Length: 173
Image (tube, rainbow, N blue to C red; front, side, top):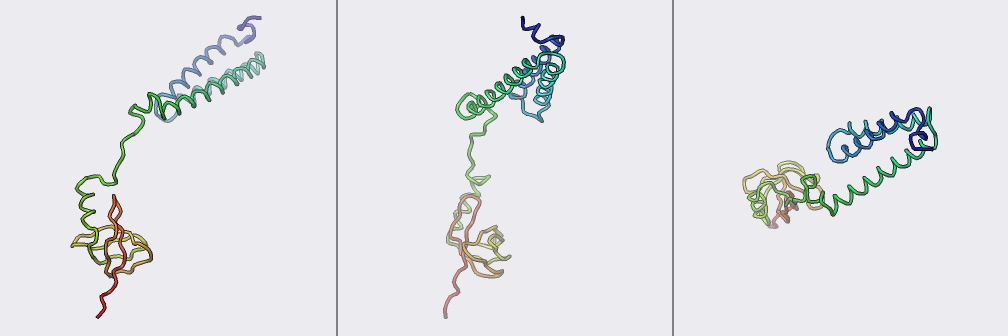
């Protein structure tokens, strides 16, 4: 019994749907988008299985389902490995650049200049809020407990986008 005879009366449509389904799945793996090609490819492969269950050979339908699942699993494994170590890891699809937390280098150095400076809270810090330091309004994070509005603070850490402050002890008379 030849392969075409095994497929039964739906041999030609089954082969066409099988080829179209696999081609669309391969296209989906390489084109970003909403998944239209992948959904269409899976629909074509489901159509092959339905044709074989209904009018062809059910054993062939199980083979097609098993081969389809194997191809999909192998494709996913290949893409993941390629994104990690292969050619795709060096492509435009994978972002390898790192950010230091500041969009402009001058901003990062300006924040580091705040280290040790004193200011006053403009809003309550629960734990984040706004403080005035050196005449500038700055987003800050409280180091530890809640700090009320209008309290003196001191900058203990300035790193990236975070400025960590603690309440400054009131001077004793």
